Structure formats: structure tokens, C-alpha cells
Length: 380
Image 1 (tube, one colour):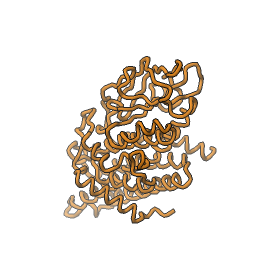
Image 2: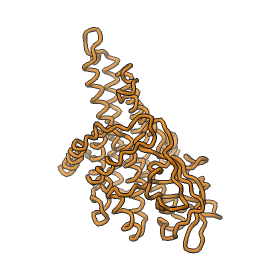
Image 3: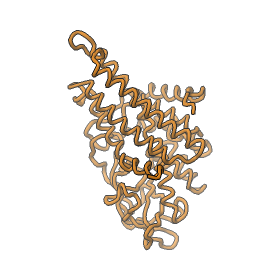
Image 4: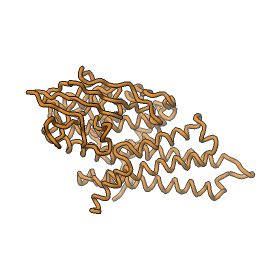
């Protein structure tokens, strides 16, 4: 496997880099402690650059990029963008929602939703997690009762990224009267039976608001169903494979930026008359950060390569998600230690990097869940 970038990939990375510089994404930071701080201007700028439609065919409003090229561009975006929440919102919109519609949607559904999702005019969210079964994903209490040519939804979805302002929600529900069949329905944000709660206050990723979606006698036409009436589990597992494998691609770039910041700071910081990089403890921390970064990038591109070539890469997706999230957290801890008291201050941005990183251990399945999945693939 050769992860070196081709001329086309380097060209796309340069395009993303130029876009980020023009939009000054390196200076856009969400207001710490202010839930619901979503940067719509930056979102729309990303759409104009083609990011939301990166992997969607041109005839449906996208760029038609292959996965390896798109991942290379997202890594560059993460290196240039300070708002990790925006990157998170983009990932949920693209990998969980757009690609699910592309893979399982009818021609009518694709033409209805994908062009506007690619253009940034509409924002999508995926509603799966519930209070009693976030990690036990299919223990759903939300029900979908078939009533003639429509479904009636009742239930609550929690921790829905983009939920407070979504124009479209992919809602997963248990078929009423069934013990295990799951259905996935496309629910417009303005459906009167679905209430979008205000953003839930949280520790980090302020630029990616999440909240509850409350469904009360929510009527949805049967033609809004993705796939067959019993295909909900397949839709969800496909969405999770994409999300686990690709959601943190921009964070690989963010880790590179963080590493460069630490090196610059350590070289400029003087103790006992010399740069602190001359102290072995500091130098070794930086070396460890570099090692984690490169190992995480390897897992990311190993997933992308296998997914692009062989179409299925469930174990590699979980390995990429687990490796990247754990590396993100440990590198953020090391960055805080290297910066000392300054890193602990909110103005430095270093402590925000740690708060943002911690969320990646939980989203799209906790680190423990990823280990369980990998163990199953190893037949343990």
C-alpha cells in the first residue's frame, strides 16, 4: 500500500489549503462555553469549496472524488482549521447522512436531498442514540407504526450532532409490533411531529451543537424510508463504518498542527538559559506525539485504501476510530504538559484541544465498543 499522494491528490490538498487560507479558518474559533455556536458562514464556505459534496457524483451536485483523495483533503482541512466542532459537524453530515442516502436511497430520494445537502443549503443529522441504549445501538424504544402509506414515529433521540438546526434527520426506529426489525426514515426538519431541542451544553466541540429530537405522532410518508422495511440495521452499520473510518480524518491534520505548535513553543521557551527542547523529558514527549500521529495516519489511510479497493472494511474502520481518538487525547495531554500553566489557560487554545479530543473517545461508539468490535473480527 502506497499512501504517497498522487499529483491529483496534491492538487486537491492545495485547493483545500488555499481555501482555508482565504477563509482564515485558522483564526475561527468557537466561543468557549457557549453551546450552539455554529459557524454557518464557514459551513457555507466549505460547501462552495465542494467539501460537503466531495464523494457525491457530479450529477447529484457533488465532486465525484475517490475516498483516498477526499481523505487527503480533509486531513489538510483539519490542519488549517481551528474549529474542531465544524469539522465534526461536516463529518456527521457527509459520512453518516449523505453517503447513506447515496447507497440506500431511491433515485427520487437522491435527487430530492443530495444536491441541496452538497450545496450547504440543507444540513443533515443522524438520529440513533437513545437514553437507554447509546452503546447498545439496536435497543430502540423509538417506534415506527405502519399506518397505510405512512409511518407514525414516537420516541426521543439524544446527542444528535447538527440536531438543533437540521433540515433533515435520518431517524432509526423499531417497527411497532416487531422485536428486532429496524427501519430508517428520512424526516424533514420542519415536520410538525418532530421537535428539535436547543443545543445541549457540553464540555467541548462547541462548534458542533448537538441536542434532542423528540418525535410525537410524527407522520412520515412510506416513500421516505431508506431501503427495505427491515434494512435499518444495514443502513446504520454502513453509516457507522463510514463515520468510524472517516470522521476523524481532519483530526489527523489537527494533530499535525498541534505538534508544530508544541515544537515552536518548546523551542522558544527558555529554562536555565536554554530551550526546553534540550530537556529529555520534553523532547521525548514531542517524539511520542510524532509517533502517535504517524501511527494514527497509517490506520486512517489503511482503512481508506481497503474501503476504496474492497468496499468493506469494518474492522479497519474501528481500528482507525480507536487509534485516532486515543492518539488525539494523549497528544492533547502531552501538549498541555509541554505548555505548562500557559496551556491550562483558556486563551491558549491548548486546553480546548483536550476538551475537544475527549469527545472522540465517545462519538460513533466508545473506545471500549471499538475494542469489542475488533475482538469479534479476530474471533476472540
